[in-house]
Image (cartoon, rainbow, N blue to C red; front, side, top):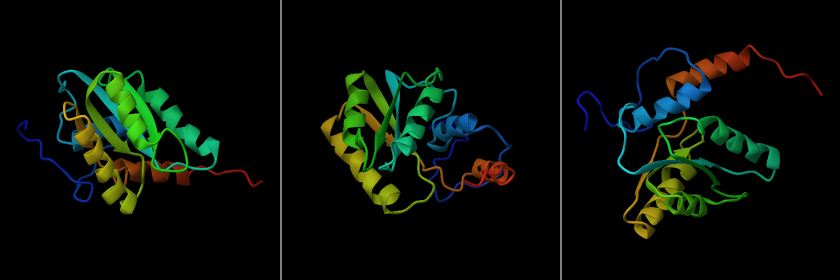
Length: 166
């Protein structure tokens, strides 16, 4: 592990970071998994974005738009989306697609705000199953969005905005 880099869990992230955009926030997530931002992993690196899923297609489309925003990041060769339930592709299908596209490392990013049972138990179970199915591929579960210090900046910005009454 690189000197000065301490592996963190979603529950022990400390400190205050400067304000940034949502895109930079997602870019910083890799540092939270103890992989320095400048590090390049051997082979092809993939991001599997994971959301809960909704019966509303508009809600599911947000994850697809996020994937499009991250697509220009040279740090990742492959970006895929998946949903825990209520929408497709499901997590195993998304993970398999990353492997089919040549990923040797898949960073599974939970697009969740809270560490409920889905984040704590279900996503780890999916990670373990994919690791067993593809032992030659490294599947890493990143911290959920949670109370990351940049989330405070996002909340402050949203509080300055209003939604017109319908």
